[in-house]
Figure 1 (cartoon, rainbow, N blue to C red):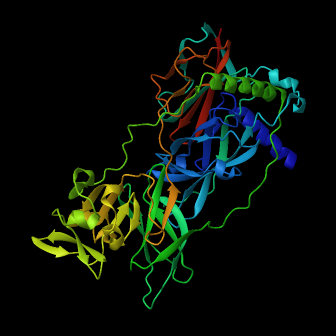
Figure 2: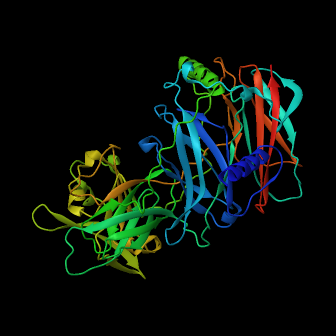
Figure 3: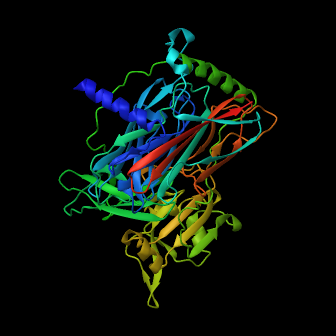
Length: 534
């Protein structure tokens, strides 16, 4: 039976790697990588679709297991069933077969995998030519590739149009394109993988999941399960309930880009500590290292030369450029902005606040001690919030107003004071009391532990980059790279795809690989053409 299963699997993959359409069920994810394997130090680019994920934007977690701290997990925004991302492999990453898992969460925080595949990585510092396995069949012609008779010039701009052998009236969901040096990847074309996913939840989590435990240092008689998280940079509060029997909680954070400092606040303002928790950790499986055949060994030698050239000319052949069109979340304007360095005044925060009229008040509370309160207006009446203001010193939080009162003015750049009732009401009930952002002149200034609220630096949604990814523009230095072009989501025109990119300074054959997905999720097609550059 195992033999029949392996045979069926082989036939299935053989069909998919040609231009014959392969039926993809709604619970199957197709993922397209820019290359069939990778070297330590390279970028991994990918694009995937699953028709069952169509609908609202959701968050997916990406984890390249077995890499430790060298490749951290991160999140992606999945829009209408598709997403794209990238992974920067560390130059010290050992050779190995690394499981790549992409999962989405249900509203009850249960995780379902939509991608479970393996990336083969080789570290060129670990291998020698004596290790290689010589396989003659690697040089055999691939029947799935069509050849283009037209030749292009080395180092010149390449313009090429490809007809898509698909029904242009059908609803195409996504088209991704990879162009790479075919001679370097001789015999290796397995860049499209199918991942059978479990039954996906209909009600999916819209935020970034965080699993943790809360400990109240001095619980007292009053028990309360409410816990809040605050992303000070984006001015976003999120709340959840803690299981009072186990002290564990699950929290959905409003999506944020890259990494953020997330503060944790107890509803009763008690002193708490937060510990991250891994729910039901899966056992780590160590896969055997990928085989180093003759083709990959030759490519390793070429990669070593590529690194030498790039180091010599102090360049990077393939660059990722942040997408500046994503401006991020808009934060409200403060009621008061105080540029401290504009005041010719020495002393501490209290000395400055005595000289200006603002809604933040410092009241003496014993000898050389102060308590803080924020004034606000509601229906024409001036009142004081009952809760103390939340101070954000370089985006790290404290409610210790006495500590803020004694900060030296020569260390402070500015204050931003939020006391408008309507603004605070829209943020959260935890914002009642007011918010005061204290930006220090030293960007590395941190609060001492005895004053700071618990905080964790968490990974958010991967920052978007500009596409297409292409080899650098021609300059004095040579242009060398095994990847020439990558675009995860290309718009076709009249059933055609137009390519326009820079060729490398090497006479070789380029494999143009196009993957077409359909909105109905019934099939996908691969188109491959070989373009000669001489």
